[in-house]
Length: 150
Image 1: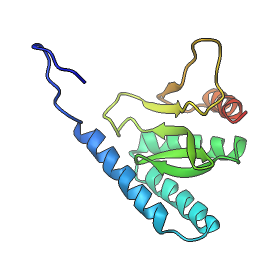
Image 2 (image 1 turned 60 degrees about the vertical axis):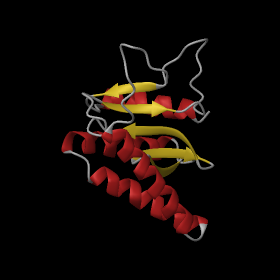
Image 3 (image 1 turned 90 degrees about the horizontal axis):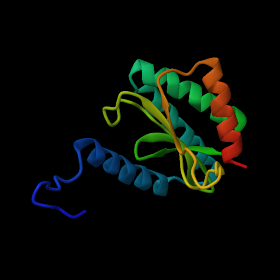
Image 4 (image 1 turned 90 degrees about the vertical axis):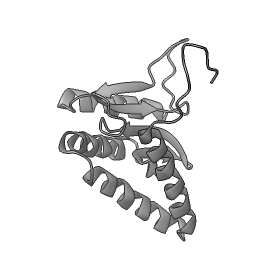
């Protein structure tokens, strides 16, 4: 990033630094685990524990997102990614849930990586704001997740 006379680069925010520390710990923890089955079971426990630690509104949404992803894209494996619940294929994140609390935002986010098959012409959405997960929102998430995995 370049700086000008009118702006200065102050570095990463405390939240960004915390996310990077989370990611480093996740990588170390994953490297110490044994078999693929053990890694998968431990990763699921880690995701559920992270969700359980969220503030109530984020936790409720994350639990519902987790259930929808697991039901509609069982080929995606839960894992932590920068301290967020994420769902991966072959170890690469396809989608993730970012709590509002994580970066002090006014809404949670359901995000998709470039691996998600959501392409729709020259421009398409890769992130969706969540303030509540209703039945209608669950249906939209299910459709997006099914489309994302092809």
